[in-house]
Length: 137
Image (cartoon, rainbow, N blue to C red; front, side):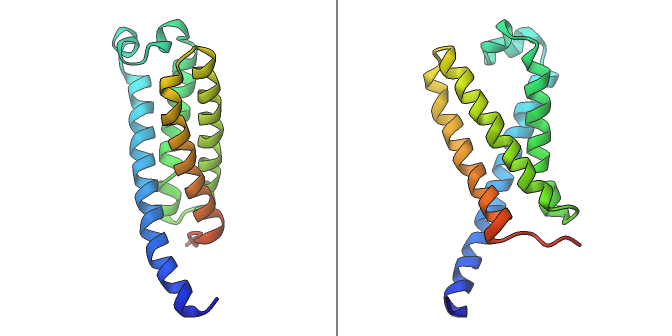
């Protein structure tokens, strides 16, 4: 590949990765905060499974919050940016488990969201792991 073909790809890839990382971070931090901060009755009105499985709420809320912070902050601060790749891997695992959980409950309408989150996170995993990793300080 010549330098002329590499530069445009990186010019598009960089902003695309930052945008997806920011959106995923907002989504997962909000989801984690919601699960950890809302009273159980309000949460159950928004997310029905939380009423039947209250033990999963703090676990998934914490995983969402940590994933949301980890998908962006290590790259943004350039402090241990490889943690972004690990956070992306963790989010993918979480979403695969969520997808299986929703299918087992007959909640197929939620599955497309899980698939989109997996695809976006896989893009970050690939982008920050191989194509355009962030260099540490």
